[in-house]
Image (cartoon, rainbow, N blue to C red):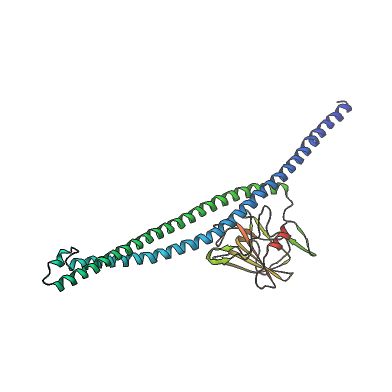
Length: 325
């Protein structure tokens, strides 16, 4: 084969490889970044929606408790009113009925007057008892309606929460595939002269929910970082895994003592990737995301807390924002 044809064939192959593969890869990268930006907005919307649902659920629980308490009270009132009404009817029957003729037929004028007056008193008492029973019954009906309305609201919130969690899960799975394409996630960067890492791998979503109402009359003491089930959880700074525990609220949890003097708390994990006493670097894998504890309503997420000096928690949102962007 002539040398010129070999060179020409080589140039054609190079053009095919470079001309098709590279621009195509660039287009994929641009598309993935564009999709990631759009999906992030959807994830943030769903996160805000779940936080709103959690607050509404707190007040719905209070309403249901109050309605049930009121129902118990008016049930007692209704029973008392029915007993009173039954007593008046019995007294009238024993007195000979309510007809004025029964008094007129008495043996003397004194007996007639006292008999009529007595029946009048009983009749007035009966009217009052009927009125009391009517009020008690109306209150009872209203209380039942309140209980039914509160239960219906709880059911609607549960359905709304499930729908939003399902949507969030689907979007996270899509976003995770995009993030895996883009790669380079969970890097460390300098914040105030110290290397820090986002506590979770992409994709994630979070808002400032410090102090928000929670069930049982509690106030939220952390930042919920929403991300896919089984997603990687990382050390936010260099430190030591100081404690691992399990509870009904936090589920599978761990505490990390940072070299910066802060204690960091991670909750609702699915499993550990570290052991107590282990020294870790910022960005190092320490656990996997889950929905243990009381996280069933809100979907998989890491409840993240910051305890300066190991003391009371402070709003961790600025720390998460600085680490995750």
